[in-house]
Length: 252
Ligand code: PEP
Image (cartoon, rainbow, N blue to C red; front, side):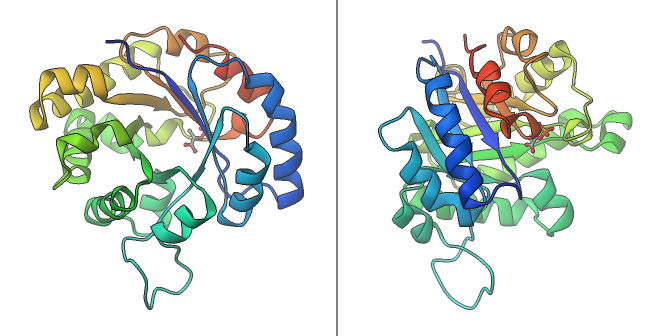
């Protein structure tokens, strides 16, 4: 069974509501014939506008984080119910910027994944090694540890609701991309880990694994041609409609 590719934009802390409306309006006609799932993940403040602007189109909307608690004294945080109420479908969990700047750990990532799934959100789970870890030759250990921790306590029947994004931290926002072969090899390691955690057929048929890290209109074709790569998580290149649409155009 072929895995359907998924291309998701991670806008990070970019775009006001007015800019969101304009970008979505430009994007809709450019991606309407996509063969892959198309997602834009926006700042919280843009979500309602993005949901409204994408109605009737093939673009799905995601948030960039979610808290693990249902509600309570967590100043500045947003719950899964709050996202669901807005019509949000996806949420990124465990992005390296959250891990690096906001104290995200394997345990909090797991708690956020569980909270999101329990409320019917689909998760884009980010894993990936730092430059120091790559240079120390521990990439496989790091992505395996992050994957195992994130899926702790997650049932097999949730596998269709989680997309894994392999994002080598040294390639994010730097213009450096993993070679297509390197990205493919590490994604295979993650898929093997999922086969061990669940079952080989589950990993082969139901687990979609994206590449992320300076993926753009120029390198997307080569990356998307690799057998293990099921799409991309796109940062910088998702902020311009034409660039993002070109990446979407390389769906398999
Ligand atoms: C990201 O933020 O997930 C990302 C991959 O960013 P960029 O494409 O800018 O490297």
